[in-house]
Amino acid sequence: MKPILALIAGLVIALGAHAQELAPDVLIKSVTEQVLDVARNDKDIQAGSSKRAIEVVETKVLPYFDFTRMTRLALGREWRQASSAQRQALTEGFQSLLVRTYSKALTEYRNQSIDYKPLKMQDGAADVKVSAEIKQPGRKPIQLDYYLERQDKGWKVYDIEVEGISLIANYRASFAAEISRGGIDGLIQSLQAKNKSNELASAKK
Image 1 (cartoon, rainbow, N blue to C red):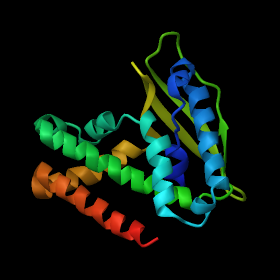
Image 2 (image 1 turned 90 degrees about the vertical axis):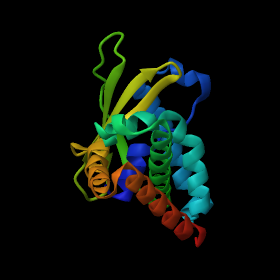
Image 3 (image 1 turned 60 degrees about the vertical axis):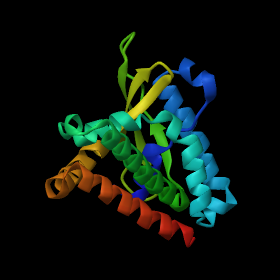
Image 4 (image 1 turned 180 degrees about the vertical axis):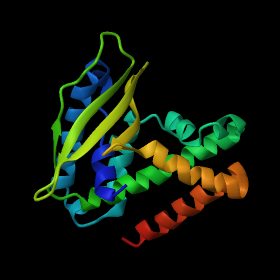
């Protein structure tokens, strides 16, 4: 998934207790537009500051993603074989990887916009899809679908599809390959190594 797609797909910002009162499509639209506004106007982000971008992602994106469910879905049946300590390490590693991906994309944002589609949702539904299109000057619109689950603290994103390609399914293939080579601990070590490399690269900016 290209960085800018990861950015627009992953942009969600905390709205406090009021977020629980919003319909999922209203939530996605409101928070995405607010974060895009940060990307357009924050001088440090416009200058390519990885540190500032990470701060924005950690404070405005993380509260509305269910990283535990995302990690479980990405591992599939291998999740059941993992110990509690391994599950925690996997979730933390996956979360850090996505934070770095989103923060990099945030510094590369330019003139994209989003059109939101009418929500098709049954009364009382606890699992919904919010659809939108990414508009890019001079290019074909890109289909974007958010998958959210209603939880005690409001709606949480657990997967995203760009042009029908699932973020979770994309990682599932690479995770399976890592596990086949080195087991669950091998995947944990791979995630830690990637995050360490990304951290060193970000520190230079």
